[in-house]
Image 1 (cartoon, one colour):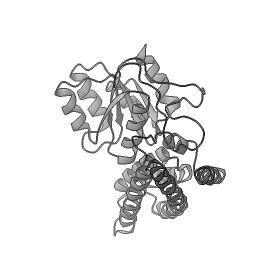
Image 2 (cartoon, helix red, strand yellow):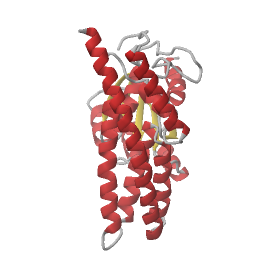
Image 3 (cartoon, one colour):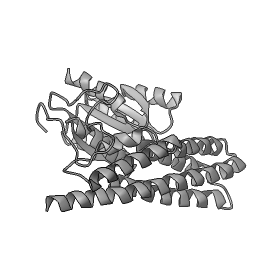
Length: 152
Length: 149
């Protein structure tokens, strides 16, 4: 992905609204800078949707199934502007993954994500170094402000 | 135009599912991710979701029907299925997962039995609708491919 990615028009799109748009604002949107993201989610459907959503806004996105894979990727030198981590990852959970990523000096924005919002989980994730914690689904209304913030 | 009629049929069908509360606006967000480069995105997502849900519900049934109820794994799977159902826009199924999770966290077997029954009911409604959507999607994709030839 390069800078100033063009808006993508899907084929056969039903519903009338163009993809990659912030439907709530009714305006076209794509990131201006070259942004990168990592999605760590053991759910295939969630991983696919979150990845496609970020890519639709021009964010170069990779996806892994486990916290260990996310940590390994960053340990290998990969850097990301945004890292989205599921709370209940198998073996190494979300907060532990965030903690290890921060311990390596990563300055990415880390977004914890979960199926069921729980204040204790939120506290655990934030204490581990996450910047925010949200309940699924990851929607355009949530993603676009984050990308704008990173873009600026 | 056949294509326009099919798209309208698809839109109407999705709206009827939204009117029934089976789907919410998140499904349209998923539809919006279909591109020329990946025209099968919606189909693949529906297929993946149904596969996960079929397997997950079967596992949960085993955990519930065992000699000792495995509440921990029931909780984990209800979390997993709530994540995927909410991500695809299956709002009533997501709510059913929430209720089941509450029961399993409370080690409430009867609550889990009732919750499981509701989850299966909501999933069956959602699955039927998604399968119908998939059929129309396949026709749309097929028409588009024939149009390019």
